[in-house]
Amino acid sequence: MVALVTPMFADGSVDFDSLSKLVEMHIESGTAAIVSMGTTGESATLDMDEHCEVMRRTVEMAAGRIPVIGGTGSNSTTEAIELTRCAQQGGVDACLLVAPYYNKPTQQGLYLHHKSIAESVDIPQILYNVPGRTACDMLPETVARLAEIPNIVGIKEATGSLERMHEILSRVPDDFDLYSGDDETGVEFMLQGGHGVISVTNNVAPKAMAAVCEAALSGDREKAVELNRPLEGLHRNLFVEANPIPVKWALNAMGLIPEGIRLPLTPLSKEFHEPLRKALRDAGVLS
Image 1 (cartoon, rainbow, N blue to C red):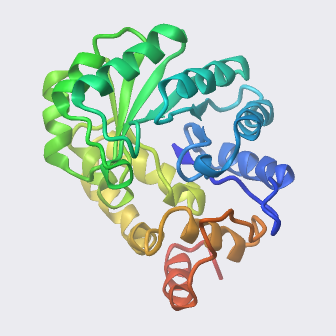
Image 2: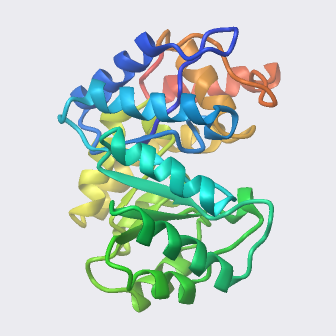
């Protein structure tokens, strides 16, 4: 699945024409689902109306040909409920809810936050644990408690820890899905029992990522590792500065989106241009 960027013009306004072209590219390339308005989509810098409009229009562009998952998490439970409702009204297939950031809730606070959202909005919901960004780590025992709630159906686990994945797997029902949120360890995550990856790399190399995931999920280690090898430079270099700074630069270099990005994020520093350009060439997506 792709954690999709939100294309923007130089003034920061959303470029919906480029967004439509990206949606078409992912449908044609075999991407399994689009995550709209996640971290990579700059959800933190779009206001509520913009956030809802991007999700709604992405659903319209997809036109039922590919599932759309709306990123609706917040560090305010009330705001997360409101965003999740607007995503549901916009027609998304599910929602992805990042653990509340900045205010550092307890594990009980995390449980009650997600329980409240799930009980307020009847739509499939995927938890998202990314402590490197949130300063808050949702522990496996909390995930297990939340997995008992019928419409909480999975988790995007972005610690990069395979040990953490196995601990969660041992605690949750068989129908609870685990998705990697770490491209660099995503192949091993799937080979060891994970159910997929919500990928930044997939923005720039969707066909290759689809093939890698198909091999990994079928248990073909040799093929998955071989197909992933040309992408390893992207897995690293797309994170040399805070996501989505590098991936938006890469898509602009590929001629797919304008160069716009919203403050406080800034364009990719010049010293990283050539290493990322080389990674794009090694992956076969830039001549």
